[in-house]
Each structure stands twice: as C-alpha cells, then as structure tokens.
Image 1 (spheres, rainbow, N blue to C red):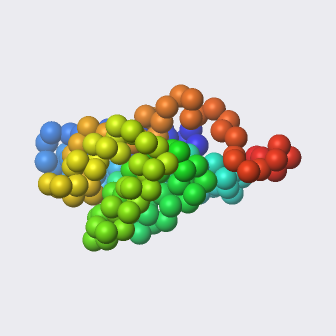
Image 2: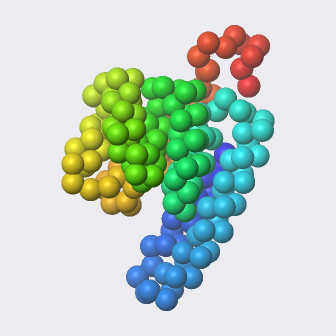
Image 3: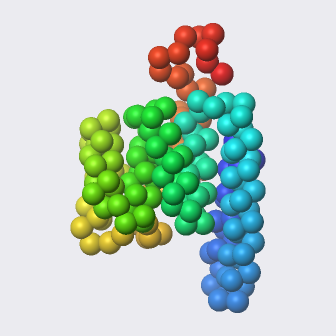
Length: 167
C-alpha cells in the first residue's frame, strides 16, 4: 500500500506544473505512475482482499485517469467492506456522477450520509451537486491516499469476521 501511495503522490505532483508543454509531459508521466500505483494496490489486494483502504486508493487512481467504471467498482467494494469510511462514499458518488448516473449518485450520497451522519465532506459534496459535476477536480476535499486519516492506517478490524479470519 505504501508503494502505491508514493506512486500516487508523485503522479499528482507531476501535473502541477505551470508550463503547458512541461505539463503535457507531466500528465503523460503521471498516467504511467497512476498505472503503476494501480498495479501495486492490485498486488496488495491479493494478500489483503478485505482492506477497504486498498480499494479506495485504487479507486482514486482510476478517478485520476478518468476510468470511472473501475473507480465505481472499487468504491462500491470499499463501502461494502467499511460502510463508515467517507472516502469510499465520496469516490462512489463522484464516479456515478461522472458516468452520467446522477440518480444513482444521489442515492449513494444519501446512503453515505445515512452511514456517516453529519460528514462534512459528504455534505459539501451534496451542496456542490447543485451547480457542478463532482467528477471534476475542483473542490477542497482531499481523498488522496496520503490524506487518509492516521487512525485509518492502523490495522482496521473487519466487521463480522472472527480473529482467525482477519488478515
């Protein structure tokens, strides 16, 4: 997971250039880094298939390269594994919206708010849906792997599994 997070961070830094020509090269290189991060998360999932953070981080990479279908799939799995994890709901709503599934996006948003009442990020996303597409890169909410709360980085127990079944 750490290697994937590092690749994701490098990819984000590359697209922040101010020179258009340099930015084009940065975008090309960042896509390669996002793909490498996706591979790292995929390999990690072979060993930890119930780690919601791996699904959310890979979904974030899919979002970065605008692979909305895969982003939605991973975000759905993340929210299934950990319904109280805001980042999963946030990505799920953005992906559904970007796929033109506004009704589905609003349903997921409501499900997220039911699971995490009062979530500031989800409430802000709800407010933004009135005037803009959540698939865009604007907005102050950060759902990057590096922004995952420290508490979440600990070994998170999986609900419903006995100690011997946890990875």
